[in-house]
Image (cartoon, rainbow, N blue to C red; front, side):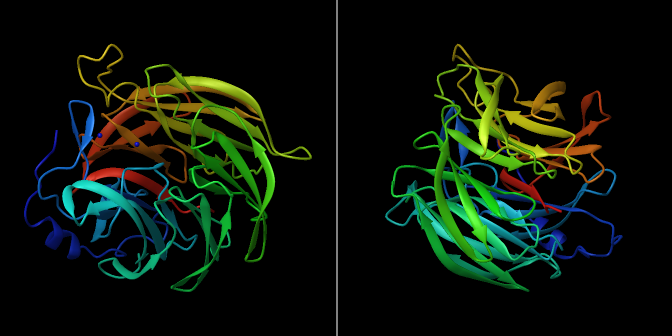
Length: 388
């Protein structure tokens, strides 16, 4: 899907003063959404007293080491896959969905949200320029490589919202309804040509195939069934395979990832690979040669739990057609969430909910090593870079 670290009162002012684009035009941005409504108390996701507002942090991933260059307040939620952020290819806009919000009748509880924030990343500081109301409990977001269409999985109502993008204007343009309110659409991934989208459904353990023609998005009615509770999903930049991670039953069993072959007459699952407890995130390197995943691996459980783990796991697999081979792994923080690659494939960021931080990892093609940490103003739960 998470110790709390105090932040200086002047953090917001300091970040606002940062010249967001006073660095090289070759910079690469990563965007982290951060939930302040979620604290891990003895293995239980708990709403803290008087939580601060949620935030969205902008990171220059091309800097060495990566650094925070901006921040804005915007609603978000740890509930759902860590793919509730999407960035346009020109890095001008970020979309951030909010699955849960504080219950107005009881601030110790959460209820389903329906908001999506549109954030201008080129403003200084970055700013929310629009808020859209979508379906119930919006979660993962997929964006095509043209940057003119996005799909948002509405986990609470069994639908996918279609959004059109023109400049800085984002418009709701209908929904795809799976006909099952408990299907739990969770995450969306576009093929590189933008003509196909895959949607995970953790409520009924299926993966749907959508056809896309312009702004017309339809359910082909074809589904795949792999692991229990398919969650985050991403398609390789090469367009030949997709990888989906499975949350499993949450009882301590080792959970899996599935490899989907996209080259045949129809997509189908061809391999299943074990990873760790509660696999959370997936991201392909820009060249499609590697795929990274995170698994919480018991770090979100009470210390007296038989399957408690001291740290989450980040793992990198080499991709050869539909075959994945583990290349390297590293231990990161607790209650891990999203993961993202630098364009050159040498640096990764991974989210740690409990520590309210991003682990910075170095990858040389053979080894994966934690080299630093970026402290954040909230517990990070969604992380993306722009697809190109």
